[in-house]
Image 1 (spheres, chains in turn cyan, red):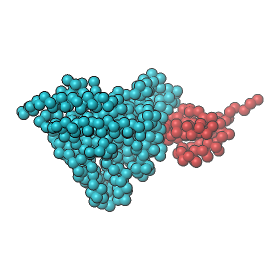
Image 2 (spheres, helix red, strand yellow):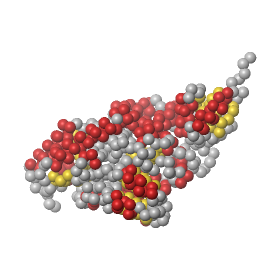
Image 3 (cartoon, chains in turn orange, brown):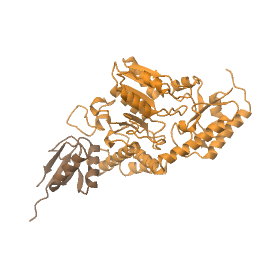
Image 4 (cartoon, one colour):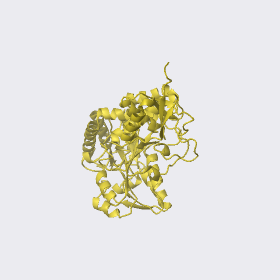
Amino acid sequence: MIYLDHAATSWPKPVEVIRALTDFLAQAGGNPGRSGHRLSIAAARTVYEAREAVAELFNAIDPLRVIFTLNATHAINLALNGLLKPGDHVVTSGIEHNSVMRPLRALEKRGVRLTVIRCKPDGSINMPDVAQALEPGVRMVVVNHASNVMGTILPVAQIAAVAHRAGALVLVDAAQTAGAFPIDIDAMDIDLLAFTGHKGLQGPPGIGGLVLGHRVEAAEIEPLVRGGTGSGSESESQPEALPDKLESGTGNGPGAAGLGAGVRWVMTRGIDAIRAYEIELTRALMEGLGRIPGVTVYGPDDARQRAAIVSFTVSGQRVSDLGLILDEEFEILCRMGLHCAPAAHRTMGTFPEGTIRFAPGLSTTIDDVQAAIEAVAQILARRRPAKQN
Amino acid sequence: MQDAPVFGVVLFYTTSAVLRAEKKLAGSGLAVKLIPTPRQLSSDCGLALRFDWSQAGRVRALLEAAQLEFQAVKRIGG
């Protein structure tokens, strides 16, 4: 079996992550921050150490400004709904995932003004277009660090510089890049970084986070959910202190333990080494697929300009048919369709049919990549007529 | 006859803040212990940091130097 769906979730997880999950459940099983006994303290320590690991990885100023959420979508919703008010103007790109577009479209109905910057078919963005969209008074700019459809990397630091000149906050969706790219929220000047734990950070699903930079005041961001935090219990008002203000109810302790272990695993392996390896896999995929007649590869031509994602279509073949053959006959697991990102597919001209997405990861070998290319070539060589119904 | 030990506690707004401070103080060589917050002092956060009261000045100085927010430093026992 060849797993080429790491952009959906990385697999398999490192043994260190699995051990952290089982250790939490078997040993540190108290409710973090709710009781004062040793198991509660052990659990709280594990969760805190995960916060510290995340803060270190992203060079965040303070572990208490790492807010744990269910996933990147939850983090994005927290940032958007927590900060945007009717009358605010928000700017985003034309290659965003529905995790950004759906909450933004809902906010638009409630009076938030939305500008979507058109991107080029390969997903890249013209900086003059960004500058033009950023009229004074824009409240927030929301961009993904890399497209989940074509892998295209957006120039986050450059966009942030322009956004800050206009007085806007910058929210970056790092779902596809956290753990696979160097991300320094200080150097890149990111105000809100949304990430998920189960992709490049090698953790389990059900844990992600929002990292708050220095421009975001605790007092200005409203929680999505209010409730028990283990703190300020004499009051029926939500506490103001971070992270508790934004983390109500018992959190995903085992998830945090697994995420912490995943982040430490990534740091031990080294972001630069991970990035170099993923570029190598991506380049091999792009070159191999690009040589097959009838295959169209989307996104930037240079593997260094994209995350480890290669989207393609095959002339005369439905992506769903090809995906099924790849799975059933070749045991190659990938994702086809619209990848929850209709805007990105419209930008690259593959809406509504979608693409096949090969997303290699750290468990992928060069031999796996070659086998996947060979499988696509074999399927095409059969010249199966496309079903037209 | 030895006097009963006199402790101080630092109170915080969140458990995460208690743990952050514990690392800082322990890392600076202070003997600190996480205890359930004494009910007579606060009901704000379930955990507090206990230390030897003779170190109160140092505890405050370290927390302030590191800009680690705390609610109060209070004396207990003795």
